[in-house]
Image (cartoon, rainbow, N blue to C red; front, side, top):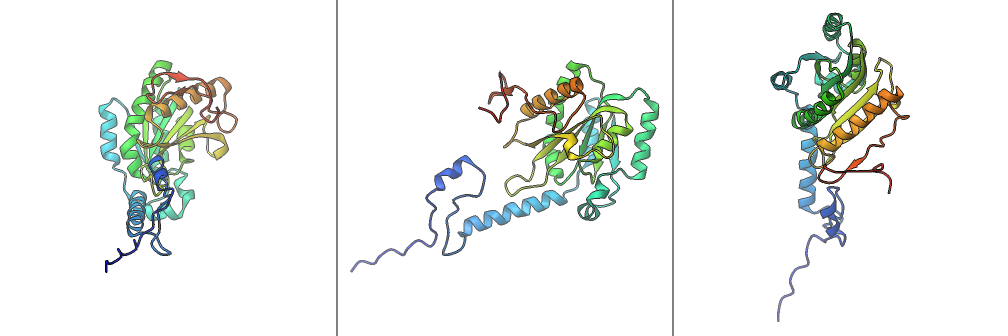
Length: 271
């Protein structure tokens, strides 16, 4: 009498073929009433990566050296949050410069009374990993367009323990017409290294999220550097023309093709 093979312990989900189209955790299957071991281990690994990204320290010295080698002046700054634990528990302190950093920015502003067209702030945010991987390649694409448009650029500001709103204080103190902040976004379980870009016209303390434009998910598996820079430059040009940013300034840039070479008309949300 032949023996029957044992029933499989893990049951495959019939939608499993859709997983090739998305990094989202779909169609994982099941083992009884639980996840299969492989899916559970993968989840735990992704969760550990996200936690590590949050607590990773940004190497501002190395980043400043790379920027200076490319001809940039650099101001190394710190928020009012003295350490990572405080930063994570007190978002309000991450939105303002420390007293020493505020004085450093003011000292430079006094030496350059004419102000600037643009200030760029690079900050750790909630993922220093994202900044380490993507800030410099993205900045290179942005610089190419800044030079073409003839905008004056303030020293690059590197800020530790920073939230988005801190960029507005930096821009105001430097008397910059516009500020762009490159900041590590809150890690997801499939994206521990996602970089966010925040743009404000006429920055000043007290601006809200409604006054800013955000371009998110900048990483190799997400929005490309070329496309992110393309959208930012469009927003900056329109902001200068209309003298505003935020919810009243829509992203209507021509959309680049997959090879980031030939533009196509229209908003990426349409048609």
